Image 1: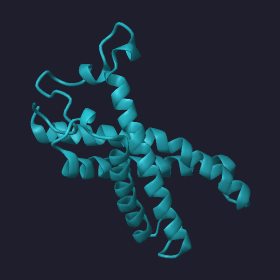
Image 2 (image 1 turned 90 degrees about the vertical axis):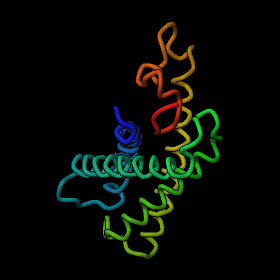
Image 3 (image 1 turned 90 degrees about the horizontal axis):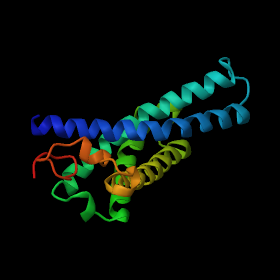
Image 4 (image 1 turned 180 degrees about the horizontal axis):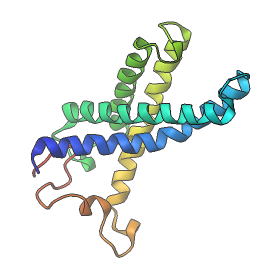
Length: 171
């Protein structure tokens, strides 16, 4: 597989991981919004599903943005060389990019006011937490005791020449 396809696969994998984590958060936000702002024509279930889907898409985009930022900034490092705070900082930066794009696009009617600032801050926070969680997940996948006698997930999904390099091919 060519290097750019490996990078694309890694970025999409990060996005899917983030989408899976952000969807339940969106569902919870939808439930709170329905209680705080009653009278939705689609009902509570519709609001929850709509918010879960929206957050999943935003998580997917955020994960891809984060993977791109991380590749540009830290592409020459391996997971075991990166600190958790540094990983979280890059995640927060990716979240800021995502939040700014969402506000610029007018998501949920947000503009550059209080609601927009809240969305940017929330996406930066979610980006930092998601990045830290991604690093912890990747590190635990490499730990042999995690899967018992089986091989690690990260080892099973990469070729021998890929090593444990982050979002890049070759060793």
